[in-house]
Image 1: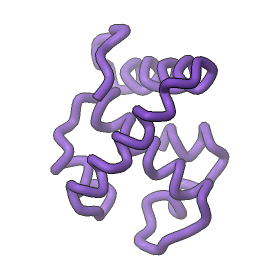
Image 2: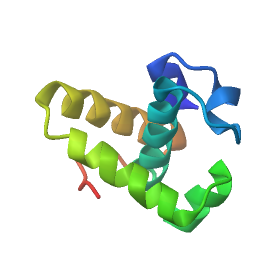
Image 3: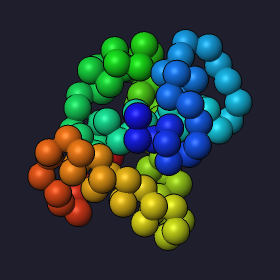
Image 4: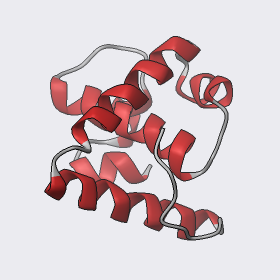
Length: 98
């Protein structure tokens, strides 16, 4: 998972069902955001993939989007989005956010 690697958290911890520390929670939220916004997957599909409820994905996406107000964070997330799209073979765009 791209988000886990970017944040430096093991993938199994991010996709696991247990609550963890804030780094894990942030990586999980970022992964959900990248899956939904970066890859264009529906929130229900992202939720199923992460073993979470759709409302959890919506909350995660809102939190990531709020942080995009910070220029450095925005550039970093935009680069991750482009990377994820490239890995998935999705069209590269400077696309819209949530």
